[in-house]
Length: 337
Image 1 (cartoon, one colour):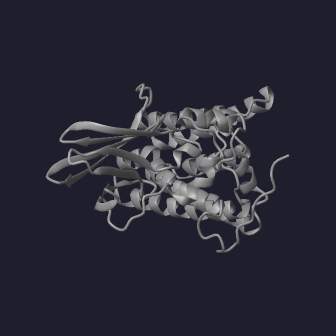
Image 2 (tube, one colour):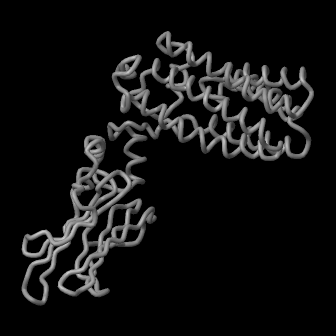
Image 3 (tube, one colour):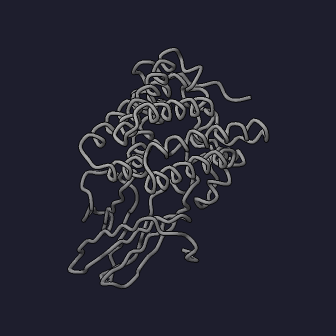
């Protein structure tokens, strides 16, 4: 096995076993450049194996073999038992003597096999390159990150700016300045023809103006906190209505902004609507039962973490990976020209 140490270790798994009075251990390192495994007996490395991070070669299990002092053959099979966990099976002269996870099959997750086979063998870095150049037919189009890098950067900057302004002035001022900056960016986008705000620019600006209007109408920090719930429910309602009609308005614009392939616009609209309603309810709970500082931290940072978890579920639903036959039944979108 060639290990040049160039990859970043994302996770390390250690699986121990006993064999004829000897202590054994298999260490599996999931890295950006592949999966590396080492078999040790009494702390001494005996055998190694490696598979690439992506490609058909990544699918096979590792096999670590050696001959024991008594002449018997030791073979350790190692690999995935789920998307997030790994296990080993130890055999001596073909007889199973140890399983780290009894009854669990050691095999690359079935649902990712076809996707992985679309790549050529390589590292995670190679996966980004192959997706960006159309070299692999995966569920994720990493080229979308490159196309949308400016709107994504603008979104992050606006969020951080809102946090800073609100921290040093008040929430009403932050809401009004945010809406003003949105209008300036919209005008700049029209003049320069550079996509600064993504495919939902007008929708986003309209929500920011409504938010600023509520902040002006109700001059208090509490009103600004609750307006997030009000605006969230309005947004959720619009997405849900669009999704129920097939997703030909807001949802299809959002789909064009996402780096995911195979998204049903109708299911995306419904999913975003339901997610928006959940996030609006969570915001209301935080606004009602915590301080303004806690709410500000939640709305700027913690809210993002929660929404990322929910949005991954929405994408799974929109791609037909879960609840495929639930309403509305999943429809594979036509490929782009």
